Length: 522
Ligand code: DHE
Image (tube, protein in one colour):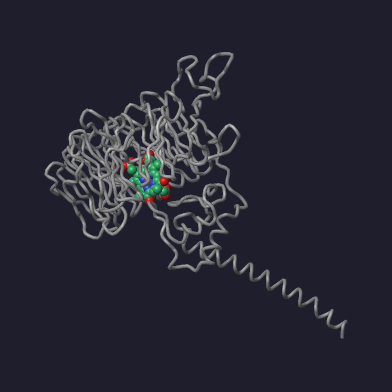
């Protein structure tokens, strides 16, 4: 008996092990199926990120698992991340979270060699005519990004007639950047593709994959360099603007080697530098693109060559680090490019002086301001900064002379984008979130009161405004697959034209962008 029992025990144990293995395998494949069904479209089937960020432990360092469970359950404000509480059971959500905190067996390397290998040059520099194929005031052109079917429309800003519609890479994000007086425009997609489009010849001239999961790009004021901020890998990639050849990959890490996602990068024209904020290390970086910075240029500590006294020849695109108190998610550069104000997820604004190389003020900003769409104007002889807030229905007005909040203008819900123009008495702000997302407020820049609330398309999100070169018209996006571009007279606030478009998101005017108008993002 005992013997036969023992004999029986072995197959039973095997069966039990098999069952457990099968159950574990089954659970894993169920979670994979759930991931494929609910997450892959935005975060990529390989978890390397698409519209949504990469879902890898190295990218989720600042998010605790329990908060990740909450994000999956309730969604994330200000992003396309929906709430899954009604769709998935708690244990399914937990299993998904567990999965995304498990390292991939293989994360592709994305350094100089891989970037170079991805480069596509369709038309080498100098091979295309220098005359536009169409008649229009180049400085009043708009590029309108249509997220609905991953296209962009080149629009004549005088006639409001489309000139050309082009396919883009999947899921562009951040503002495309104009260069060379409107001859070229550079796009960045969330999965790292940088595309250079020749507007005169209506064709792409070069593309390169500068990262795996990218935030945004900036172009040097002289049009020579493009820099790309990446979440994955933790790098900034510098490209030669002529044909997008990679010049340098800068590892985003602190002195101890802790690496970081890069929140965003912008150009600081008069400083001839790029300024970048880091998401996982409390540092702001300034990266020079000068050929010959003044010898001993103060502060170029990193890569500074003691013997030659030269900071640059040895190491182009040298980095100057500024320590800040907290991680910056988003920031605004002042019109003089001497200070930035950045926000942390803790609701604090930090003002950092780029010359003093330190934080100089704190501003309580609990509504989570969307500072990359902040704008400035003169009021009573002072320069004020206005920013919408992603968590609270209010526009914050800050005096940039003393960094004091002077007013919180109550709106019908949290907003995302804000715009004005030097020639316009009004600032426009959308209500991007909540039941009133079809509203658009118009604010008087002097009284700081809402003077009109527009509802361009009832029931559909209206968002993101941009002005024509002369400030006479304001263009509003109806952010819907069956959407439109609605053009308003910026003084009478009456509609003058409506063009059907597929989920138009941002629109970018050559003159306003290249002159760094204080009413628009840069
Ligand atoms: Fe954006 C610009 C960050 C979600 C549409 N967004 C920017 C910029 C940053 C940023 C830092 C400035 C870069 C530039 O223009 O060079 N965006 C973030 C986020 O951290 C956030 C909240 C989360 C994320 O998923 O990355 C986020 N953004 C979104 C969206 O969900 C939006 C609405 C839809 C989309 O395209 O993904 C969106 N962001 C935009 C647009 C701009 C932008 C249209 C350019 C605005 C401009 O006028 O310059």
